[in-house]
Amino acid sequence: MVSRSAGKEVIQVSAVETRLHARGLFLPDEVRLPPDVTAPFQWARVHDTRVIASGHGALNPDGSLRGPFGSVPGEVPLDQAQESAQGALLALLASVRRAVGDLDRVTWLSMTGFVNADRSFPLTTLVLNPASELVLELFGPAAGAHARVAPGVCALPQDLPVIIAAELELRSPG
Picture 1 (cartoon, one colour):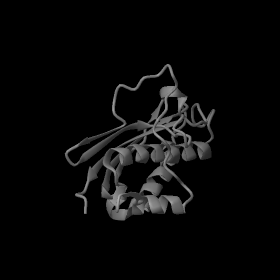
Picture 2: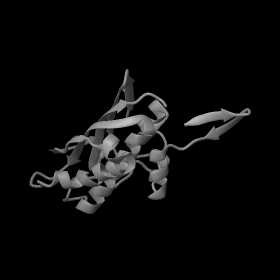
Picture 3: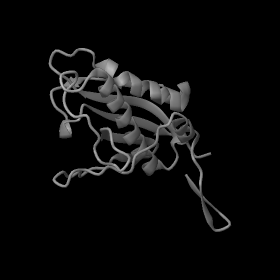
């Protein structure tokens, strides 16, 4: 959130971002896709009081796609897939913040996390648990409680191990 005071720009960090920074985590820059990839959609679409966040993968601080890449657990071990899920959540939160300005206005409704899973891997919910836990920690039980779907799929864009999308609701600024 940005405000102006006596002609100077003052950055005000939301309570959600303060909790994020206290954990040593930061929101990445806007998504930078490889040159041959186009994204003819919005990363976060606001309509009335709803925010629909497109599927996000983990990003490096500069917005480029972050590895590891491949299927879980054959190419990407469970612990690295869980880290990727948290990274995907941070990328999603960065897009939502750019769209709405203040993460403190957000209430979570649902999270959909797709896991690039080996055919015989039944533990896709374990991959997404750290992302759900981080939402609850950052937003609290009232605004962070959410429904969730965590299917395993045979492939994801750019061979990412996890992609997370979400539906959120906005509270009035105040």
